[in-house]
Length: 92
Image (tube, rainbow, N blue to C red; front, side):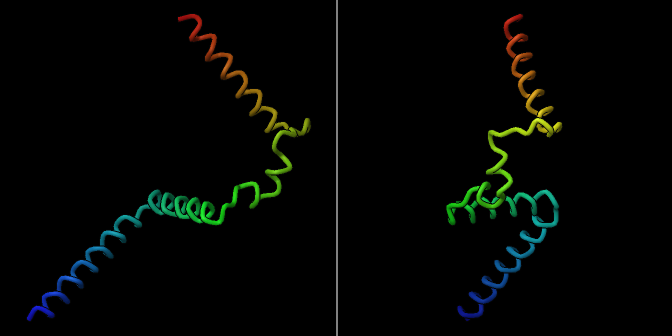
């Protein structure tokens, strides 16, 4: 009789885990989080960085192209944000 109770308990726990996992993974946001975390752990175990996966990033870092308007605008906005933040704090 004990063997039957163990099987029932195991199958109940397994069914509950599957149902909870299905419910959790039913949302896009949760699937994205899980995928992102899985990829982070995988790259940490392999000791890889983003630059190793995308050679463009290695070339791009620290060498802004004057013709790259989007990148230059982003850098300009970032610089202005810190200046504006500092000025606001100085006024208060």
